[in-house]
Length: 128
Image 1: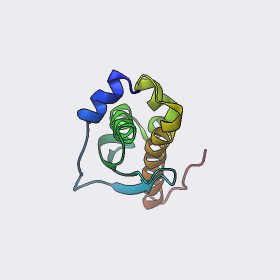
Image 2: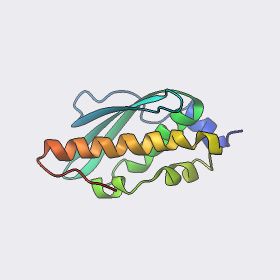
Image 3: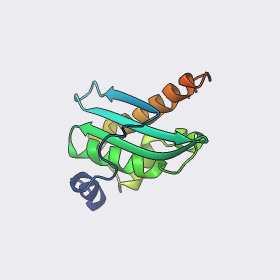
Image 4: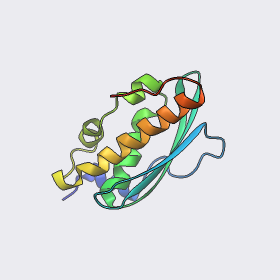
């Protein structure tokens, strides 16, 4: 059902944990299945220098969070904002259609964290 990449990121997730000195922390949930993701961003000079996550959910949710954090680490906020759930699913080698909402959870968490940071900086939040 899942690709080897999905299983690897589920069994050996990258960037799991908390960042005590995070610049922004958000928690989002999926109404479809009840999964939740908390994401922590450390930002320096408009660049994500560190990222951690905590996800309570299925294999696809954990793998999506793991892959997404790998994909945004070291990126500018603008680059990270452009990451879509399809980018995450493609990087995982695909997700079953009924699990695509898991990659949407990762995308949503990243975008909410970026907008929370922008708001704290006195900047307008970004929209689609």
